[in-house]
Length: 258
Image 1 (cartoon, one colour):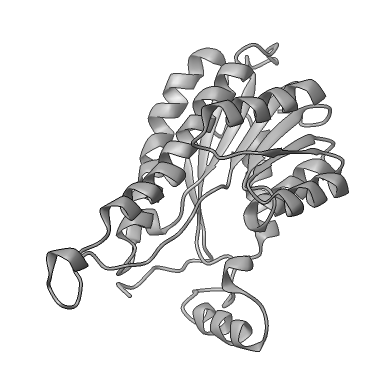
Image 2 (cartoon, rainbow, N blue to C red; image 1 turned 135 degrees about the vertical axis):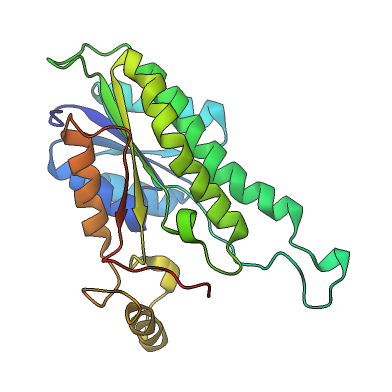
């Protein structure tokens, strides 16, 4: 798929994996709409790459449609990369064995709602918009890349909510691609391992912690770079024969129980 002179929506595009993907798309001549909740950073990155910013909660249908319409006003919407999401760590049963100490059910619902339902919300609306595009020689009208995690297949202790949400995104991939084939839209999924993003903080303590995490990686023994994720996302968008796949990018790490 040719990216130049098209538009894209990147959810969570103001930082981390989303920001790296935004910059990679812009370098390919794409007008990128950053759909995020961080207004200051989102507007800054959008200005730097010649794109646009949309304040967007991915679970809010009206806000998602507004971001899509903004992208369409810049150029035909050909790409969506879903990077928005949250993480949380807590065990299913509390240390004291009391009902009240069990995993908070509202928190579980929130993680599922943002990570899984929010991802699907963007997919269903973006694909609807893409279905109106003129097809290329393969009949392609657009492509979607979703972000899961290797936690979705081998979640660790305390990751029940996060792993459930990411496992759901992985499970979504094949039927989503099958649903969207009729309108000429491809759908793939990336399962990152340990990627160096702002979630780990900065400074000496952060560097020490990231170095410790990197010891469990097979090779190279370090955390991944957001740019490496973005490179894979670009490949999945541009390679027309990539469809219905969930691909690990983790340097060979296999999570232990904890």
